[in-house]
Image (cartoon, rainbow, N blue to C red; front, side, top):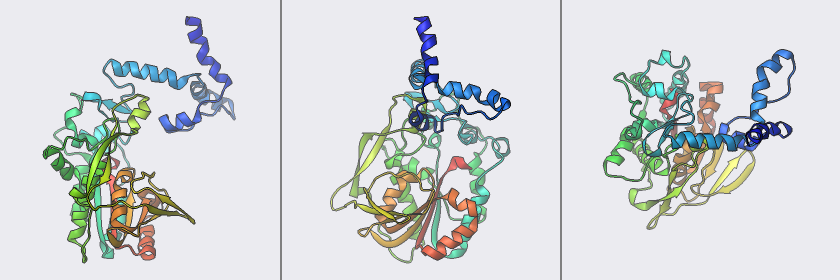
Amino acid sequence: MLMLFLITPTLGLLSPPDRASMIRVELREPNSCSFVSVVDFTQRLNGCLTDRVLYRFELIKGLNFLYHYLGTSPKPAVAVRGKNDWYYLGEFYDAAISKFRGISPGNVLPFSKEEQFKGVLDVLKGSGVNYIFSVVPDKPRIYPEYLPQWLRPSRHSSRFDQVRRRLRARHYRVLYLKDALLSRIRTGESAPLYFESDSHWNYRGAYEGYKAIMRELKKNSRETLRTIEEGELSFKPTEGTCDLANLLQLDLPCTNQVPTPTGTMRFHILKMTAGDVATSIGPFEQLEEPMYIRRISNESALNSRKLLFIDDSFGRALNPFLRQTFSEVREVHYEVLFREGSASVVRLLAEYKPDVVVVNAVERIF
């Protein structure tokens, strides 16, 4: 039996690694076994052999389950295990834990997107367009009760708290969505607003963010903006797909809250245009955040207004509500605009002429 256990993994050297599984679970391509020099061989051999172990993902999954069964996280740097099988993003991604605990910005990461967002917000503030910069709180801000005992914020302000003060000092319209989400929980809302084993909010949480954003936009709108009201939809709990569960290769609780219209409210099929290709998409179909300009049209939208939506991965659950609200939505990831600087924002405003601009990002990127 021992001999079989030792020999079986090495047979994987005769077959290529499961590329699809590696991209889905580890978010990367398999290590190459093509070497151009002796130095290259010594530096990359270990990665080449490791990726070609037979039944690699099955073996890792079994080991990860053992760690989880014993009450700890299989990969604490990737995901920290909390109470009731809740998981939180680990230090590996954007130094998420250190920032939550209030470590000084200079001691965490030397690079922040603060200056790049200032360039975007400077253009919007000077353009006269109705805009809002909404910032989504990290999961520990909303559900600290499930955090492990050792993971608690310090008495110091978080990295984003410091950034937020500087942004407000420049009189940008910044909306931190933490209060809106916590307010919903205080009403006795039992449905989770974030996935238990994902780093993102679900549709229920995104809807609370949507309502707060629309309230702020209405304050500066010359015309009435209709919104999806509380009584016009309900949420049905369904099993979702969670990023942290995938990375850990564990079957963990992952509850989404799918919106369902009630009364006279209807969610409409949409027309998506990317380049010269037009396709139809479902009203709440989740799309990856676009690294290009994507146009969504809705002839039956609540308002005949145009929206420019600059977002990140948290926009996947938020923008379906916006697509039902605005007749045309142009969506783009902020990283696309950062490549060219503020000039790209000036060009977008001139070419598209949006009535409303929403910039949305999660706090940990700061």
